[in-house]
Image (cartoon, rainbow, N blue to C red; front, side, top):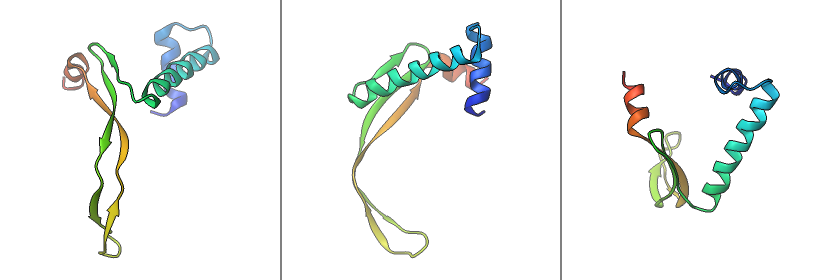
Length: 92
């Protein structure tokens, strides 16, 4: 599903009057999540899941094209852990 399709569905489910209104609300929601994660904080939606920033350690890996070993630097990554309710719905 692409963003346009999601906005159309979001408009119907959220009972917004226009697609533009649905898109504005979605953008505000996503921007808010970004702001929380930029502060390295965690956000949890009971029954849906949890977004959190995790540290990924530096590691060595092999370049598949050249076969040479290379270093991958440490970095922060966003991790999503589904909640029980979402996991159960997905696994039906």
